[in-house]
Length: 247
Ligand code: CA
Image 1 (spheres, rainbow, N blue to C red):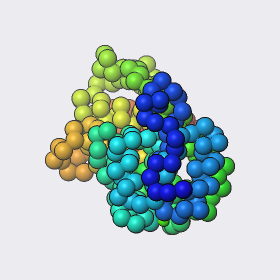
Image 2 (image 1 turned 90 degrees about the vertical axis):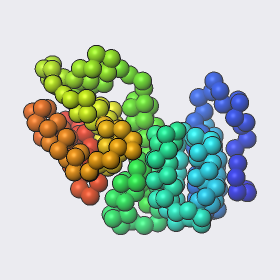
Image 3 (image 1 turned 180 degrees about the vertical axis):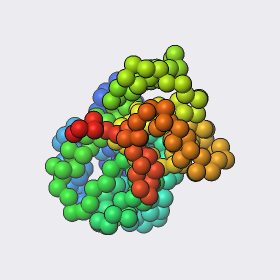
Image 4 (image 1 turned 90 degrees about the horizontal axis):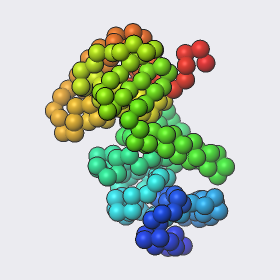
C-alpha cells in the first residue's frame, strides 16, 4: 500500500451510489492496513494518506463522507488539519473521528474544540471504531437532512416560517437567537465551541467577543424557560441536551 489513493473507484462512479467514502489520515501503516481492510469489507470506499499535508489536501479535494484523523502526523498535525477543515466552507461539515494515542482528557477537549466529532484512543478494536463510525453517520444523516422542521425534546424549529416553540408555545427569538438555537438543535449532544456558534449565528468572519455568545445563550435559556436544555461544556462551549432529563 502506498501513500495516496488506495480505493479503486473513480470519482464519477460514485454518483448515484451510496457507498460512503472514508478518508484515513494516519501515518502508522500497520494500522491503516487493518483499518482499510476492515472498512472496505464493511462496504466503505477507503482512501489512505500517511502525511498531514497530503491528508488535508485530499480532504479538501475528495470531500469524503467521514475522516479518521491521527493527531501526531508528519507534515501538519491532526488538530491543525481539523481546524483547517472546520474553517473551510466545503469541508466544515465532514464528520471527523480523531484517532490518538493520547488518552488525556485535555487532548480530547482540544480535539472537540477544534471541531472533531468523536475521539477514539489507541489501541482500539476495529469493532468499536466501526460502531462509532456508524453512530456518527446516523447522527450526521439525521442532522444533515435539509429538514425545514427540526424537533427535539419538545423544542421545535420551523425554518421556513421562522418560528420556534417549546412545548407548543411560541418563542419570541431574535434572528441571532434563532440561528443559534437551530445550530444546537440540529445536532443534539454535539459540543460546539463559542467560535463555531458565532459563525453559525452571527456569520463567518463577524468580529464579536466570545462573551457575546454567552449572553445570547443566557437569553435563549431564559426564553426556553429551562436551563437544562442547553448545556455548558466546560472548556469547550455549549451543546443541546441529547436525552430527556429523567434518563
Ligand atoms: Ca501518528
